[in-house]
Picture 1 (cartoon, helix red, strand yellow):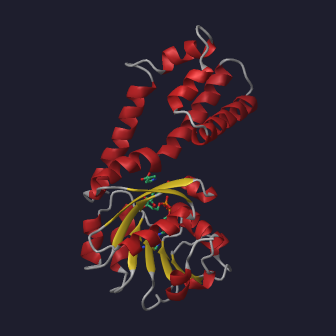
Picture 2 (cartoon, rainbow, N blue to C red):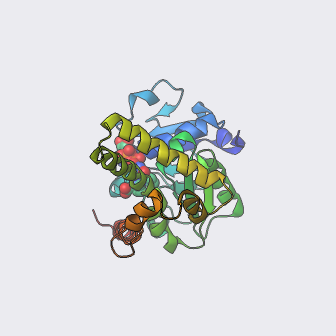
Length: 271
Ligand SMILES: NC(=O)C1=CN([C@@H]2O[C@H](COP(=O)(O)OP(=O)(O)OC[C@H]3O[C@@H](n4cnc5c(N)ncnc54)[C@H](O)[C@@H]3O)[C@@H](O)[C@H]2O)C=CC1
Ligand SMILES: O=C(O)[C@@H]1CCC=N1
């Protein structure tokens, strides 16, 4: 259980309870956040969140401990426009791109933390990166970290400049891995396996390799070498996958660069 005493006393407001907001709320409730201490603002709140004891689309409490913004960056202007002046409230945003400066304009003087989570948070296996503005104290950062640790691991950034690259790597990253499962399954089918068998093999290979990469003492490079017999099947496959010009490294570099750049565009207010 996390120490949510202060939040349970003063309450938390969640603006936007979709995939990311909902994943975080699931973890917080499991971690000891009291439903009655949560006000959820979302005009299209999913039915699963009704009748859970939450305050839904209700008036905002006077001085919540935390305001969490989890709407799309393109909707952030609307959401911020509906917020009252908040004093002594920690503002946390998980939005891609939207900068601390944007939130500082909306909440002058407020402590603000940008957090970049990812959807494995839905099963407590996320990783979140966080950076606070100049008004945040160590206590604000610790409170943010406690919230995000309820849904996975947390790393603290040294500078906001890192946030778009983090977004392009670990926030968008689950989609890359899901696509890798799709691609591996399709490749297995192309070699004659049934769709169901190929998908099961691909899914569990990625899941097992991911878990091994987390739990083993060795680096991923050593784990890869452990699979690779001299002149064996893996070496034949990796000769294609690791090709410096046409393999995964240049493809992944372009993928993360494109996502990072899109984060920068969103930060400049692009639609
Ligand atoms: N989905 C992901 O993998 C990740 C998403 N994020 C960020 O999380 C934020 C939310 O993304 P998702 O949860 O994927 O989107 P989503 O579309 O699933 O959820 C957004 C929610 O906001 C609600 N909403 C829209 N306008 C609103 C308003 N004015 N006031 C209150 N609620 C409003 C919508 O009804 C919806 O339920 C985005 O800023 C995104 O950049 C960050 C990391 C990962
Ligand atoms: O695709 C997006 O813009 C959001 C932010 C990172 C993951 N999903």
